[in-house]
Image (cartoon, rainbow, N blue to C red; front, top):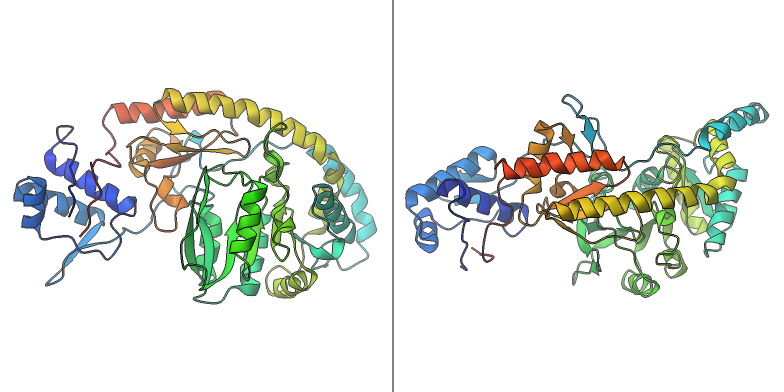
Length: 455
């Protein structure tokens, strides 16, 4: 057992020890089911009194991080997750600053496009309004846009969805097996991970950071599907190069790969460029949406893939939503010719807000890698617990999910995802409140140790 040293002197010794142990659990270095050494062994190894160790373990039992069984010792566990998912309404009084989602106000073109869409609706009213693949003109417009991005696509390779998450759910509905493995980045979008669990599949994490994917050995043999976000990954901001995408295609050959391009249109105009991942993984299914580029209220997206794959998904959707709404599709169709102009405006807005966010985060003493696009910063809190920071922020009117919410194993406690989509003054105020909470001692340390220890 290597040494674990609590940061004594900040509060009482037992609280410091509890903070350090809690951090090891939330960072995934102590796993659920691990058995801790006997109390006396811990006390001797850490040069602490047995009373201090007992008090720390008792506190963690109350919080739900430990349990004890007669004859089995003290066992690590994770408490029930009663926090709000980032994209769910809060159960408590709504905070005045909400950093749980990254959304922009509607693009200025939306209102006029909605009027034109309503004017076109009468020509579709004599029909049933039920087209499982989507309106043919919209499918053709989506195919043309994908072709223009370097991914040759025909209309029969496109299925219209109600957003990228809906497309991912349809893909799982069609191809995931109960108990089957699904490769998913860690950290990743919480709703995408929850969709895997709802289909009774098993998330299999693949590490990702701003520098790229860290592929595990042996994890691919038991997986059926893979979900990746190579364009300004949520939440790390990672952007995969052509070489990275080509390597991904080789590594995942034989798996059905889902490529989420939700943020593909939100890179800097002079930023990195790469071919769509499906250019390298030709059997991949690509997800797209208008909800980030145009407005979250425009619930129209698409999936693009091989014709036989799209046909199977279209058949499977019959038990869910039958077909996408006609009026929404007409709105999307009216917006398609304006997407380049919308993209230029969004890029400039996000570039300015990202620069402010990076400066604000670094001024707070935290670290982040500035992405070249997307909507989020993945912030290293430099030793603070995001779980505790999230709770302290909520008490101060700021809603921000802990980094553990973006992990399949509830790790990444020293990270925080911050969107830079809102007004800069709002983000500055949120960070001010969070750093004030830290200065007032409202938080515990996330990594109060000098070395990893094993049992």
